[in-house]
Image (cartoon, rainbow, N blue to C red; front, side, top):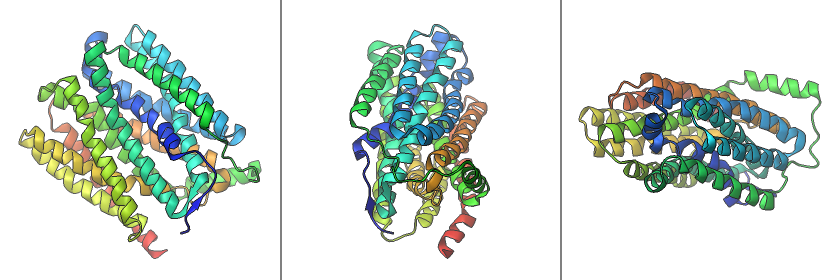
Length: 394
């Protein structure tokens, strides 16, 4: 593979655009117990702020993916950030849980542009080994951003109260809008011949029938499902069972940050020696082994060992994720915006479903989270083996 760098945004801007939707999701997690008390709803109900986020997010990636092809990458991104800002203002003004959920969905719908449009920009601007490395770095940001979210949320809640988390999101959205308006270029190729409707339909049908696309969609959804299931359940494990404060829980995000950064560094180094498919399989295998250790630590009721298990579980997942993102849509460049939209719709529905199932599995014990992570990692590991064999034969 050649190293190709085309005209596009800076890596810093890419990281900001791909990271803010993740921060918006996880910044809620330290305040879930407080939000449950303030809104007078159960733990399972308040966890709907997590799963509902991804339902609206899934719808949004389809819409913004289509608009990115029709209007251009820059207009679609800026419009999404405006909707995201509007949703955050609504969250701040919400007085009951129903309105909170509604504005949460609007927030997620706008934030989804940061995922689908940014990935489209990346796939157009970087290819080959350079593309794989850029995806590794941005995948680290995708995992690092939600890891920082709980820390930010915990600090803000401790100092100012849970409602000021929403004002923090308003300030973040305003800053991102101004910076993107200044620095984001249009990356849609001017020379790209737009396919006819018939060609577009044929390409989308091919996409829908492509088993490799389905497998990578399941893996990306499953990995992110593990991540956000952790964020939905972990506050009740570490704050509820082990007695951590919201600020102490927020600092635990640094463990996931370390896992994501370590995964990115390993992928960058190992790509020169191993195929992406091999790294995906190895990463999933590590997450299965670590998930077993995490479950054992939960049985021992040992918070320290559980944190070690969490680190290695997510280290394995972060080795697999960037390679899945980079390999998923090869061969669909002519309809990249639409392909990214439909693809992202599929895997974010998986994320939403898996996060919701975590709330269903919530039973007040500390065993449900490690059992869930181990089960998901095992399913992904087993399901990927046929794709691994195909990749090795190419």
